[in-house]
Image 1: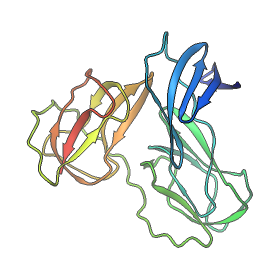
Image 2: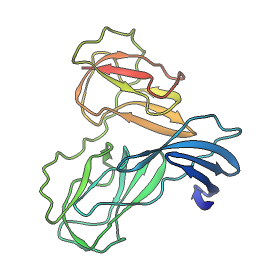
Image 3: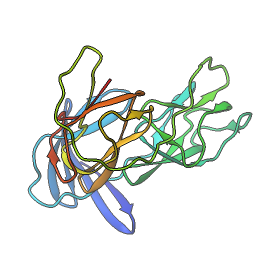
Image 4: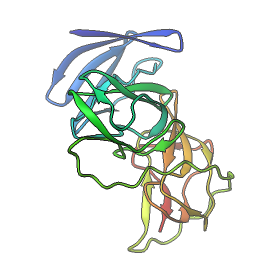
Length: 236
């Protein structure tokens, strides 16, 4: 059994990993049992399969190591600090930047000794999952800098509209409750704009648009409870 201790805003949390069988893990957070499923991708994403016996406490995201060719954002979030610039020589384990995601600050570390080639982000900038943040020397990558999150006005929900072949449906990544909707039907949005805010496991998550387009339908209102994979917004 492995034990980890985390501290968030002055509160301490103890996480115990009791057993891992293939992609199923049994863990305890401050004594509360959970069964979680691990998706083995570029990063591990934990999704809860059953309701815990008691109160859910947030768990911090661990510090991540990055590849030696380029850095991609592990989660949607906001850049807090950038500690390097083009031409800097960094060593394995050096902190390259800090980003905030789901009210948690995550240090992005260098995995190998290398030289910074290009930095695509700056403090205060919003990024989407898998956006390229930094390139190292020897990396031939052409990217568009992640878009800034725009501020729009909350609007009433619309009735569902028929989908066409070009319709893109934004689905809920987690079960939770909608706090605020920032868009209206017919509104033109850009990649990276905030569509709505979802509260899940006592953490607020901004749902960002992955593409530019026009809002066709909004399926939720503030205060509404949604399940994972529920349709939130249609856009085209």
